[in-house]
Image 1 (cartoon, rainbow, N blue to C red):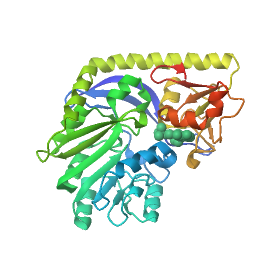
Image 2: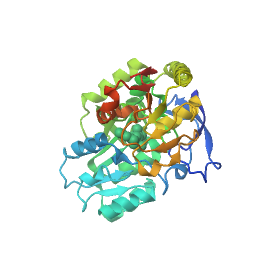
Image 3: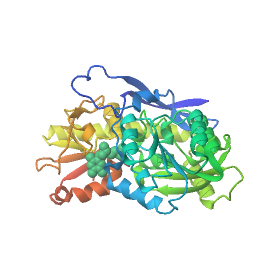
Length: 387
Ligand code: TMP
């Protein structure tokens, strides 16, 4: 049974950037989060219908950050390129382009990106991941040695269907490897903005193993990653086919200390979220009173949650700078702040709210002039402060 612990208010589709034509027909839903006492899963109370988010207009490009490009390149180099691999949620090909075109298979529901990986030469299925699709792929291409997904499994409401489909398509000793933001890190960082329409679940290792096991899979290894504000890379195999690495128990023991299996932890987390909102609004109003120019860096899905939950609009943040062409010259969802691209932070900017706080190092390196002249970033992670 799900118990609600957090209400982030009315939220729009996090990646639906607006033009002046569609600014009036915006879809909003209530973003409330609950804790499932049976599986220990942290999950939305109601799920947004996936085609509303993942369609031919989807704008999030994984390859916009060199951190992520290097991350996938390094990981792929650990494996033999001859293995049969399928990627669920291949986006613009940032991961799969490190693999062999004749064997790697991409699955991507967003048509614009499916067309890009097809053009690169990869067999691409422009569909949502389901048991039926896995069955179809098995018939055409046979079972797969590796099924991989990055920042995708936590997007899928029906985890049982997802894991059954994976189990059916894996070879007997095949491995399912997937990485998503970590619930433990969300608690440590106070990063409630990991929660938005596309992230119906924020995973703990404990909850994932509970749900994988009821679908014939078990976690055999966990790697803690720094990307996306702290993620876990999960290795799962068919139950009983492999030894279990000590990292699994270590992660579960750590999560138990944090209390991720206990609703009380999330009730306390919700109180911290309210505090974070009050502190951020206070800082931004102070900047406004003092006549400072504040902009935001990275038109992220995460900042859609923050801006709409905190009621931040153009009166507090003048514009958002983002490198993604599909987001530029549009308005941010719900908060309607203009998005544009600036090569570097302009000289008259006093403060920069870090929508893309998870790329702090990459951004500080790029914006060394701003840092040198004493420019400050504003972040809410792990607490609201100037950075
Ligand atoms: P993400 O946090 O969901 O990965 O989104 C990061 C967004 O920030 C994406 O739209 C690209 C943008 N971005 C910049 O505009 N400049 C940068 O230097 C980096 C690293 C990201």
